[in-house]
Length: 301
Image 1 (spheres, rainbow, N blue to C red):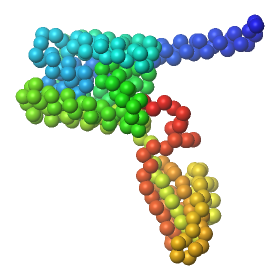
Image 2 (cartoon, helix red, strand yellow):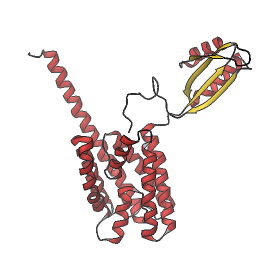
Image 3 (tube, rainbow, N blue to C red):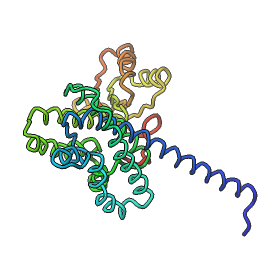
Image 4 (cartoon, rainbow, N blue to C red):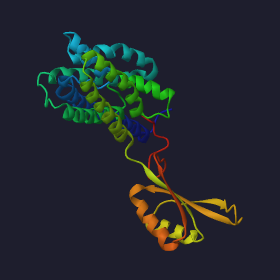
């Protein structure tokens, strides 16, 4: 059956959009790889800071061989890329292989520039932050920088409840401990640990955002007035939960609502105005899915 002109134009439009998206992803990967290389070549590697993962192993091996750190990053990644090919498909591996090659190349090129600073604390903080930003951008572009990133993705399939940054923290800690023995310098290894922690915390922020919120339960005889003001003045959703007082046996509507942290003082003010005797429970919600927050259908990185 022949396609209509409208259908042909729609298919052509989708192809163009896909092509632009792929091009944009590779531009992001290139920029992120350069940022990652800056962290390694100008901050971490010159100060013998092994930041965990394949990069940390490459820094250690560079000290005991004549092979550059960037080259070691590439060599170690080759078997890991082959391992990940069957699990994540050719498109993922192609983009990851490109990111690995870019990181290796930029790292070797920037090694000639020399360290930005020899202060271990500044190198740890700045290096860890730059690595987290770079990794987050690469992950969002649908790739990784290879190495432990692929291992972490495999672990995420097995343990989806664990966040990416937490898994990196576990695997990177092992490399940091190894660096303490390899360099025979516990102080340098401790600074490398700072890199790992900063990278872990900031990576979760880059990937998931600061979407923590407040979950509030309100028990009040003036629940209708409180609900009306929350809906009108704050424009957030409210749910009634049927409850019953154990002592009085009286039925009550318990108000449940979730809101971003900055809105909670306004909610507390409304509750205080309408019913100073209201019973209120405020707790933290670490992840929120739904309208105004993250999509429940989005893939977890």
